[in-house]
Amino acid sequence: MEKISHLVENAFIIAWEYLEATGELGEAEDTAGELLDIIQTMIRTGERRRILIANVAIDTYRRRRLRGEERNGRPDKAGAA
Image (cartoon, rainbow, N blue to C red; front, top):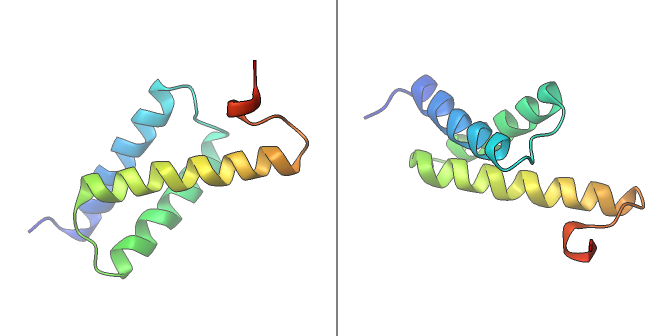
């Protein structure tokens, strides 16, 4: 079984690199903190599948970012031309 520290690191790297590759990576410090919070919460609930953890972190990050943009009066990606 993978050590918890390796699980956190591997899930984080997967999520980070994906968001970076798609151009969705926000401010580095904020993004890192948010991804780590999501990952740690999932691990605390017993999840150990790193790909699932990374995918949930990506999806949660995207949803939160989209909601933040909508609240700030910016169009969401679906509404952009």
